[in-house]
Amino acid sequence: MYVDYEPVAARRSHLILQREEVTDWAGIVQEDLRHPQAIFDHPETARLIDFTQPVALLMVALLHFVGPDDRPDELMATYRDRLAGAAGWPSTTSPVARPSRPPPPRPTTCAS
Image (cartoon, rainbow, N blue to C red; front, side):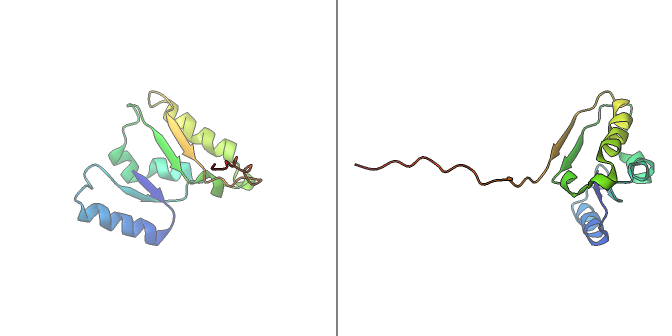
């Protein structure tokens, strides 16, 4: 299941899933990740995810958009607590990181 809050992206994703004829096992929920209960309560979530079975959560290139005012610790706890009942809490996050300082220079070699 894929979640996106942006209407054009969500609609396009739905059309791709229909075109590829995979809507029996894949789906899209148009919602903001900061509203986890709305995601969990969505009919598409109920159709696709059996929370009595192990569930993995992938938040790829996403959490860097969540600011301190969004209370990220509480937000992630909501997901963790709901998925903990799904036989574990396997997850991954993949922020798009920018170094705070430039990397050190690479050693140079001289050809003789």
